[in-house]
Length: 125
Image (cartoon, rainbow, N blue to C red; front, side):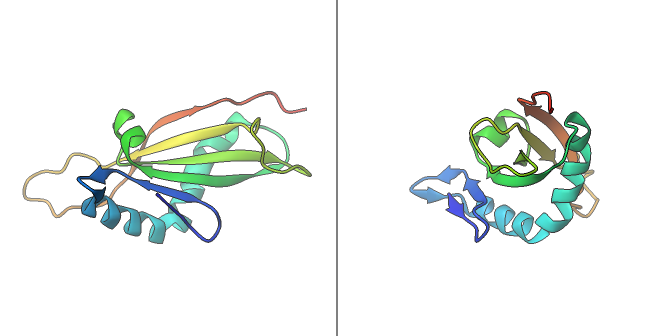
């Protein structure tokens, strides 16, 4: 696990005595693409919560949790209502991204589809 400058945690699966080299490569690619991926994920989860506030990316997970959701990686977002701070009761959503199946002769294309959305939303006043 590592923490980015904005406090986002990045979790990579272990491979032997350290992080998986493939996991590190994936993490670098996704972190470099996060400003493209974040708005796409938020666009899907935003309708679940009404009210003023902002979304905060908490984690990008390439480890066991991502595998459990049949995803290449998960992005976990918390919703922070206006005029408050992030806390343990902030609603959160994990959005899983997966690579589509490739045909053998096709060049690999990193197309993503959202696989899972989970969280604990609560009514906003």
